[in-house]
Length: 167
Image (tube, rainbow, N blue to C red; front, side, top):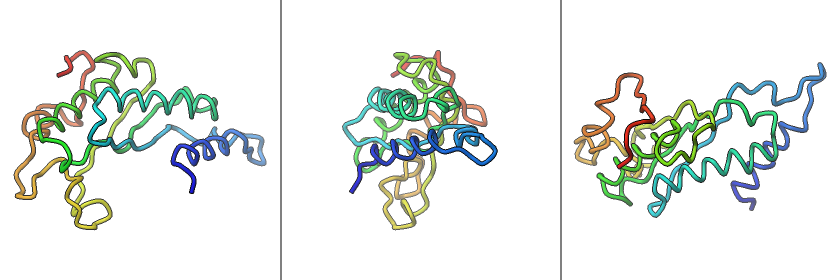
């Protein structure tokens, strides 16, 4: 079985090495570069930012340089709510969003990360009843701190300015 990194390299190589009948490269059809990055309980926001940078540098830039300059969307990220504390979840999400905007320690400064998406999973991933990924609400239905102490204060659509201090 191939690792997710090996599969990603294969996909980016295919974009780089395939041409359409009109002469355009398959990479010309992509508007943005996107990927998911959900963290393990031991991975803090710095680790996630470094891993995102690694994906951009060592997978996209190396194997598909035509897409290296394009906007990056992190289309899913977070940590299982049943593996870290509510307060840790709030701090990690805030800090990684600051990093994605180019602030904080600057791990992602200049990497064109334009959008990041956080989802409320209804009934768990794939509807399997696993509520461990519901980062917005406790099983009781009460909002978690990431909602009532952080996200609710951001204007819609929620935008984290990069100059806010990390926690």
